[in-house]
Image (cartoon, rainbow, N blue to C red; front, top):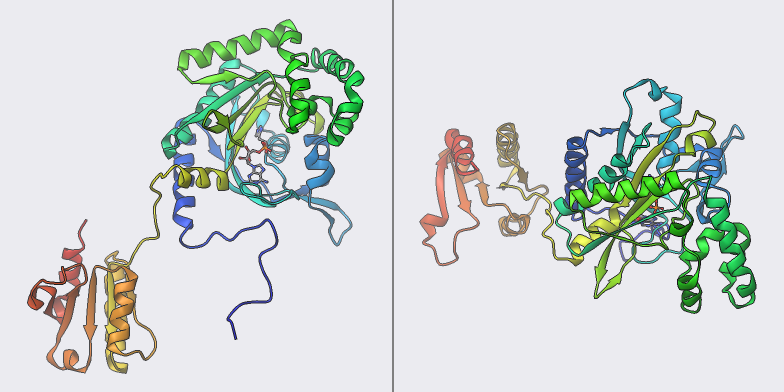
Length: 434
Ligand code: HAM
């Protein structure tokens, strides 16, 4: 009978297996180090919140709220939602903990946050995914927008990614956007019959998202649609110009995409995305974000400007692998101890204990396996050294130590030697010095 369970991981979820874990740790380390350099501090919020945090924060008309949230009533009858994105929860925490009394901006990051969206699973799109996320609250300065974009860019540079492009846009604020949205509706209404089914709904519910349609037949309509950039009010236009001046001064390679709109309703002014480009074609985003100056108010707080981004960790790792970036692998043991017989196994356990106390990575054989099987396990483990303990070694007080990395044609006395039991720890520690 095959040794499998009748259960499988839920569709759209994935296990992070031991061979993948070091790559995740690597991404986390780079994110942590880079964020700290930019003055960010770590925060982690619960993975569920009252549903209103997202329904109000992310917006009723968005795909996330309308179709993708994992919402349930707990046993007390409260409607809860598994976190579909980080920002609303972080803003809720900022307000709840009175962080407006701290020096502003308050700069926060999260790592490996599990997020849940009931999307159609495909490569790079999961029902549980993880993000690292940065948020800076309490400051509207365009310099902060540029710094935020620079931070996302730098993280990917430090991860070793190549051929990625930054796109930016300004989608205005509550003063200028309504007039733009009306212009968009006026432009699209006569074209309504010719729109894809999704766009027919967007025209009524969330006209800005008309610009985000991927259907081939709607592309010419998008290209000819009025652009937000032509409708920005003066403060928004000035803000956007200042963001660009900062980005230019920092030498960041960005392009303005006048059609860039984001899938969450809380954005105002600057929005941006980072995506790999292949053969001139932009792939799906590895990170995205923007300013959300109205979000704190939506959650019942005082007006508090904010800006941030989220970046998918699965997508980051997939991209690095596709680009051939060498990612760390699981650490191999330095020493493998093979033992034959009950007494030898006790000696092996004590030796492993002593070597580990000296900071070496050590494995020993378990069970009643032949020496041949144990040596095979030693070789498979990737260890450099094998120690062999049998009744002969116990009697002579000298353990056999074998160099598993020695060339096959090396003389046998170079491959393997006897080391006095009392000296084995010191001898191996000396060999394994970095
Ligand atoms: P978002 O664009 O929805 O923005 O997600 C950010 C990133 O998360 C995406 O660029 C993508 O890399 C990854 N991502 C999103 N959904 C999935 C999925 N189903 N499977 C795998 N990866 C995914 C936000 O979530 C905003 N909260 C970002 C933000 C922070 N804006 C301001 N602050």
